[in-house]
Image (tube, rainbow, N blue to C red; front, side, top):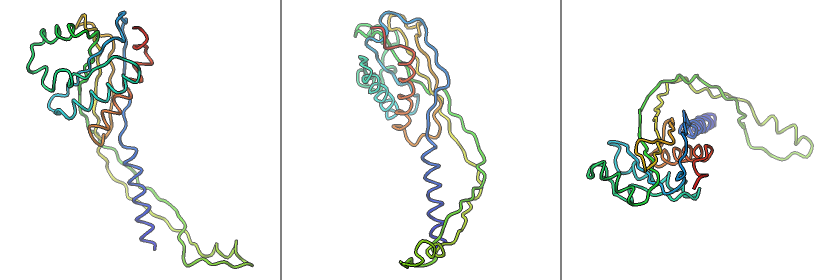
Length: 220
């Protein structure tokens, strides 16, 4: 019985740690002078290097979904141009094509860095009550007698070193009329993502919330 409760306590601790692992926070954000077309038709490009199509599609879809919820006319570059648009098309030709398609803005999503650090998690001790035998009803001593059917025990988990991965991402929004005119830049830190989809969803939620707070969707 003692071993059973120890296993349950350890399992609960592991689940709690895993549930708290993955998180995205905003590091910095900046917004410039917003042109009149801000909040118009927007194209989202996910440029994640050798991370593959799965990452590109997941990040673009996540950002597009949240921007659509803000009533932004937004499109995924993966859907519009396919996975290899920047590889197959000259940059100037691509910029002209974006303007011809009526896009007012372009968002570029990039992975700036991947960092890893180590943290020592100290040992923990949990005290819990363990039943010693079957409980039964006694009309005279019910509330008190049953107290003797339990004793208190402790479970101690040893300390350990934990490696944490940090993904530093950036979202940069440009005015499509001038490719050098950035109107919004934000950096995020995602800690120990479980997979590409969850990481994309957390990133998108963080970025779109900040964009809304800074008023990028007010001017039409």
